[in-house]
Amino acid sequence: MLRSQSNIRSYRVRGMTDPDATQRLVLGALLDAHPRLIGRDELTAKLADVPRVREALRVLVDDGLATQLGDRVGVSRAAVRFAVLRPT
Image (tube, rainbow, N blue to C red; front, side, top):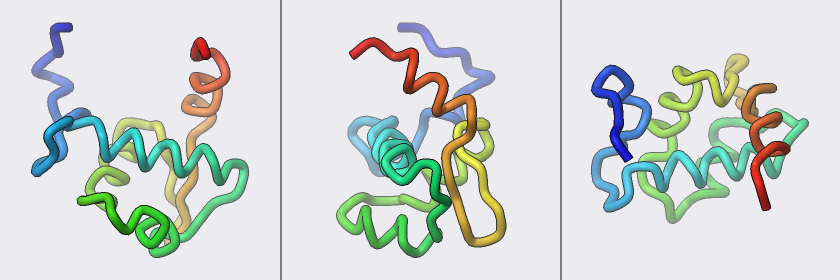
């Protein structure tokens, strides 16, 4: 699969063999918590064994897949809808 260089930031998390792995885990945790917003510290504790959770969260927020209100984070409507449409 070819990736656009203009979107390079949305899929790179340094220090990971699979650059998307942390973002997938963070998004999965946010989807599990939906519709509740969770604290950034709660998310980091929930994914304690996952490196660079806060960096991955920032990328997801920047890409529109997660929302942040102060210290609380959750999935965006677009991410929820995509999860519903995704084949099982």
